[in-house]
Amino acid sequence: MRDWIPVPGSAKARLVESGLRHFGERGYEAASVIEIARDANVTTGSLYHHFESKRAFFVVIRTEVQRRVRDRMEGAWAAVAAGAAGAGGREEVAAALLVGFDAAVHFHSARLLSEPIEPEDDVLAAVLEPMLGPAPRHAGGVVMGAWRAALAAVAAGTPAPEARAGLEWLLTAP
Image (tube, rainbow, N blue to C red; front, side, top):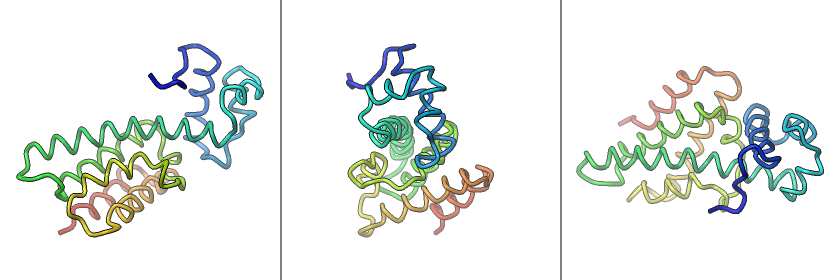
């Protein structure tokens, strides 16, 4: 069991719920630890007791959201691969990324997942790599860049179906 999983209803659980909302709606820079703590009905001292910094708190929140999205991406990839001749094809990758996009939007995490990320913290890029099979070098970074750009468009106000259509066009183009 992950050591940071909070007990439901605890101060830590309320902080995580509040952090999901604030980082999801505002992004890292605009989210305020004072507002996050206030919404969780705790002090900022409590936030820093549970998480060493705003950045560490954000990484915990983003990693959890990435894991939720990753699980759906892996499921979509496996379902399409099971019906296809071979794994690592573009169809499987497109299915995984589109399902991941839908999940990110559903979780109200478009802004959170479109923010810059260190390669070692990028759970989604790591899961995408083996899905790409014999793709050209750096294809994963290019594809994830497009995926994050589509999420950034949603965060900026583009309707999700419109951003998804652009991503789908890119991923499924011959």
